[in-house]
Length: 500
Image (cartoon, rainbow, N blue to C red; front, side, top):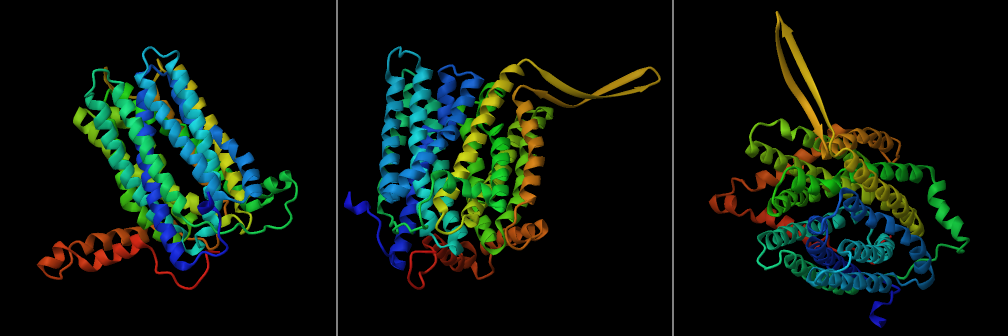
């Protein structure tokens, strides 16, 4: 595959074209994930009779398989061909998705859940190796001054198509147009595999600069230990571990909570997920601009409390009287969680790339992968075990008022089954905020300034749609459209080089 070899120099034009290809790559990868992972994968596992612990295992697999980044780091250093490694491993993972498509078509397969978990583990393993190569590749390719801008574009396209794909997959499976309802999942996995191949094609087109010489190789233990000896980066690792535990203690089970405890159809569940991701897509561009203009830490200090308060709000849904009000509140919670998650994903990713020293990106980013792998793998397994033990438990807080022999009771809140997980995860958020406060990222920015800047970004976008530049201008803001077009295409290249 000579076309996949790295090059000595990446011109500004090639860098700009490569950024477009990488945006499209994630877009198609998101379509693949929408049809073969996430809500659809969990719903398929539940249709096969998965328990809470097995759902937790499915959520833990992508994290546990991140340990593959350890040998991947060695492989990258020896081959020094990150594009070839990522394209080959990710394409193999997409081929395995087609095996998932065959699983629902088998008549009386032996241990279908075991087969599902085994194939999914192999897919996640290949994705971990490919992801390690891509992280090191992008760390060198994308200039640090453009990280927020580039990843905002990339996340926007990926999130938007993930919304459309998940909604389509939910409607496809939920309407059950086939004699066997599991056949809808087979078609969804087939679409996911094909979309993954398209993603690999775009990934192969992006340029890869030749890896820089980071000095004498040194022992493997020495290279992998460097991130943990870096005090500030070690604080980042503690923060990421705490965030990963808190988020994955509850997030993987929201789908199960909606399907089993609330009794919603798959179409409703996917629409809730799409509402969250749509809010994510609408605001991730603003978060990207803010992270470049202010700091990633300041953005995280605002969005993390918003996320954990949204998790806690799920506990109080049952206190609403009507089913319509409960569903409306769930849409509101998912929208707020989507806004917060967009800022968290963007700022946390940028923070890791920013604090990793130049020339040592592979080892430092692999350290992030290993830490989050352990934390993210333990959290859903522990949560799944806790959910099974708390399945028949309920905790109710009452207020009793007694006056002259008359007594009145009012229920303040009641926890049952999955709601225990949401409350515990919200409490974990307190330590996450403490861990974030210990990280140093240049100048300190107040949370109030981030909120003001975010409000200004939102207000400018809203007012651009209602400008007073005439009737046609108010209906079609050409000036703002030009700005969006420039953002989508990326900044005009200036000067040579392939990034820092």
